Length: 222
Image (cartoon, rainbow, N blue to C red; front, side, top):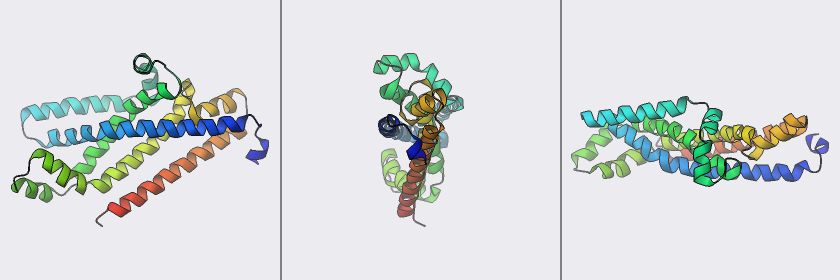
């Protein structure tokens, strides 16, 4: 029914918007994982350390993470427009959306990483330390391998969160399915296009969740 009611010029834009959403998701997720994983590890290590300097570092990082996480994404998107313009040369479109997406999702993912690392059995860490392992060896040979199912689950949740962020970016010309829904569904009063974008987003979220669940199950020790 939706397919028969849609205007012919909407279909090419729908596929283009879908591709833009996938590119925004892939690019922002890659940078988020790259930045959020070490930030989460640093939060965990500094939070577990009894040293005053490390505890102070944890307090500062935790405050920064909480501040950024408390900002609604649409507000963060607007606040970052000058910085986005400086970094990418544009405030809108695919390139103009990646920096705020990364800034909004990185603290979220870092906190999930910290939580996943806290769930690692302390006995494994202590056994690695007793064997004389360095901090980097503890991280890469004990912490990250043991926390892998939790980290994969965190990445899945972050990816789904980024899908909603990419849709919100359409309100300010960010492109993708959110922009298509605003232009056709809101300004042109075409609910068929609006519903199609909703269905496509639901399918994307479901696929991400299924993939994440399968990876978590595959790497889980249970």
